[in-house]
Length: 137
View (tube, rainbow, N blue to C red):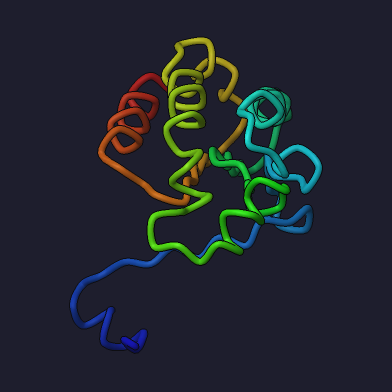
């Protein structure tokens, strides 16, 4: 592993985000909403989160399919070709990225403070959506 001192010497920057009610953070994640292979409950949680004023906000864009029977079966097979995360990524990204890119979402985030969009696999599409969202906010 790389030490913190080594990262500082390399001019790397780290952001540690401990989201809790004590830190003024509003987090979209809940076990009930995110234990799914369907984007619908995650999208509902995201929409509810952006409408809640907070010092800072965490928007988690990927469901936890491993908490479902389908996801568990993908893990149990131990196949190199199966991945619960990759098996749902396209479905979730198609819904959550479109929602995040919507101008109405930028308006709803006015009272959200610092906003962190999380995905288990951050890609160029998410970086582009977030850059656009930042410029609109």
